[in-house]
Image (cartoon, helix red, strand yellow):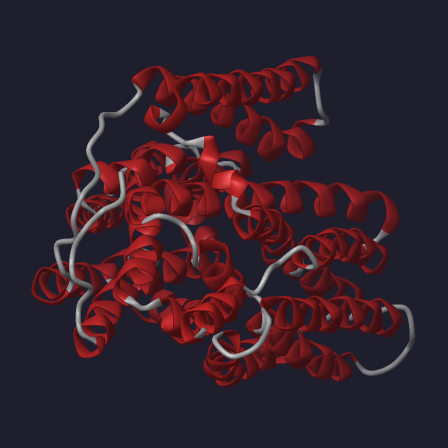
Length: 458
């Protein structure tokens, strides 16, 4: 069933975008700030390394596992309601984290925080794609990319300041104003869009929860534990579970949690593959770069942070332009250009990290990484989601975000494992290989936006 309803005015669309961006900014800010606070958390609670790592790992697990389910919730119960619920749970989780009396309590509160982020993330993308006309979504998602760049840039800098000034609890207290503002402004500015008829398939929900939990946990913990037999069994169970999940979706047709009709759209299928490669790169690239700068070059964390700052600054400047171009050019051109820049830049990084040049030369390729990413994030999202029916937008957004997050988990595990064997520089080759997969996938994009416009003129 296709949803009816009059789309909001452009002004209301941008106001809604501002409210939704607060939630998006908040969740990304949390991910980029938490690493700064972990040493202080360990000292205060006298925690071991594994406990401290779980403060970060449980959040990612709680974000990834429910995404297929939470995206569909927005279709049926309303994206605005689900966004506000997700932001509220994220805020409660942040409050509990700030008040945590023990590391175990902190880990549990981080799980709640991650679940809240999992609810609000797919709603943000779904609403943006529903309130902006097809020919303006690239520009809107370009601004969305700017918000992401700001959060990525501000996280480590702001985290370092607030932890030094107010203690580790401040990285959680700082979310509360964003939570209040996001809930109030979304209530005022985000329209209550029409919902789809249907109900949640709880058998599929259970299958996806079990499969993704087994898979993500195994991939997260495998490198840390040396891949014992039980981790390999969990990994196999996760893969088999996803196979069963897909069969369930096929049998349920349009009543499925994830209707497989989504993948009949070639742009959606290609974009979902491309975003896996981008998630792989984004989550893993800083591991070898920072290891090389701080360990092999003996740089301070501050100087290493300055070297990679051009990435976020360039992305901040280029993302709006890339968004405008995404509405004007064939999507294949922008995506291939972006992937080409990224692949060439990682080869440049690989070369520089094996020579005896000053580490400060890495500022140049880091700036190029910012430009390359800007050409892909917004345009890939716009192209992938452009032709999805409104009643499937939440489910489509859930799958898209799941693909990105699963790529992130696999990227961190793979690059960390390769780095232990081959070193920091050579581990970049794995990222290049994954980006090549994304580049090939983007070659399958079709220009449905301008084809429809041309047909309308005829």
